[in-house]
Length: 289
Image 1: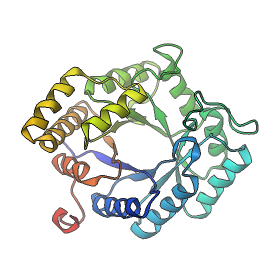
Image 2 (image 1 turned 90 degrees about the vertical axis):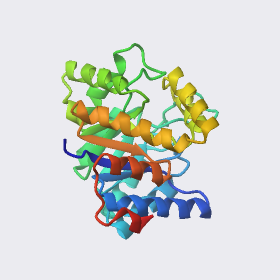
Image 3 (image 1 turned 30 degrees about the vertical axis):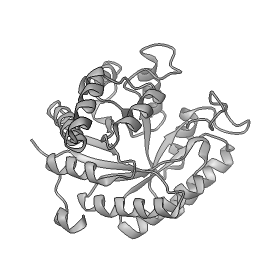
Image 4 (image 1 turned 180 degrees about the vertical axis):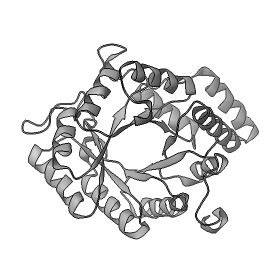
């Protein structure tokens, strides 16, 4: 079975210490030759300038294909397209186009009066420029704002029809969650290979669990039990590596060709899982530790 293609998500640093962690993360994972890496926006577009700096620096210093996150939040159409144009002028050729989360405490998303109302409008405008490969988000479990269980698949189809090239899913903990979603996409006429599963290596179970609950991701009871036992035995890292590798292996055995890792700027577990999946580094892994 061939090794999967891979990609990574990073987030822009807000402190000097976080900057060192980001660059160490990129340095460790770049030798794995990802198809692309993406850099996120903060909620409400709070890291817009930091995202731009991180995107351009990663591309320039590491030679990676970098996808910049771009959202509809708190900006006019002209401002958003100006940001996209600045990326194009900097040589960035990929964008992850998202509606975006509202600022903290704002509740539901409210479009800027002169901005894009939703992600489909943003995708259409970016596609019209002809400058970018466009990736979008997808939800293998029901989005909190979805009208019904099929709404997420129908909305994803609209985004792809608007000009998106592929979709990256929210993370999940059991392979069946993604496989059911992929089947639903195929039934709606979506090419299965355009849907990339998002994988989150569990560096810290309590933190990831809290994150999952905030995003509506199902937390299986067996995971709570497994990490409780592993914590008592001091084997959390071993368990996390085994679980993530098993999840990825199951997906690949079911025909998944591309895995997207949410690194949280913590590279070791992601690197170990990629190595276990047969993804070989351009240089020996021990030389980038």
